Each structure stands twice: as structure tokens, then as C-alpha cells.
Image (cartoon, helix red, strand yellow):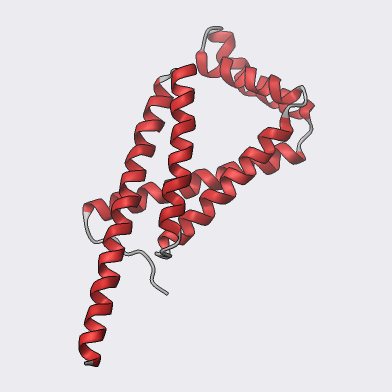
Length: 171
């Protein structure tokens, strides 16, 4: 079973990018499981605890206020969709990253389609709720999509060359 072995700087960038996607997917799975298992009151307590010191020094801190707001939304019982989103999103990412690292040909088009759908959603968020972080994530995801597309074609060419060599050897 082939496993990805980066040869060039672009190969290494591709591997780092998809491994980061896999780590992100793992965190999404963990977060989804935690939201599923932890009570809404605990979510509210934890977000208040995490943001208390920061907001005491700077009541207008955007990140702390965002975390507090999101925690409050989750503590009011809106966890079902978040759990479903995080678990499905995380499982898909981890599965695709594993398949891409194993150079499974079916994974490349699936990864391109799913990553493009995620990118479209991020573009929507970028339009409706612009932020520097969303710009950064969108640009990075666009680069990852291009790297997956590039790697897919490199692997196809390698396999075609390998098959051609085998046919010549057999002849």
C-alpha cells in the first residue's frame, strides 16, 4: 500500500496542509463529542471561566466576546446542530486526509468537491461576517484545494508511467 512521501517543497507543503486539515478534523471530532457529552450549564461555566480575566482587563476584546457569545448560544440548548456539524465535518476530514496520505485515487475528487463546498460556505461567511481570520482560512483552503488537485495529477501521471513501463516489460 503506497504512502505519501514528499519529494519537493510543493509535496511537503501539500503534506503539511492536509495533515493540518486532519488535525483540525480531529479537534472537530473531540469538540463534537464534548458538546454531546457535556451539559449546557457546564459549557456556559467553562466559557465564562475562559473569558473572565481577559474581559476584566479589556471588555471589548473581540475574541473573548465571541467565545462568550458562542458559549452562551450553546448553553441555551443549541448544541444538536453544532454536534452534528462538528462530528460529520471532523470524520469526513480525518477520513479524507488518511485516504489522501495513502494515495487512494477515489479520495482526490471527493476531497476537491468537499473542500470546494466548504470554501463556498467560507466565502458566504466572509461576505456576511467578514473577519481577518476568515480571509486567512479561505486563502489557505484555496491553496490546499490547488495542492490536492496538483497532487492528484502527479499521482495519476506516476501511475500511468508505472503501467506503461509494466506493459513494455511484459511485451
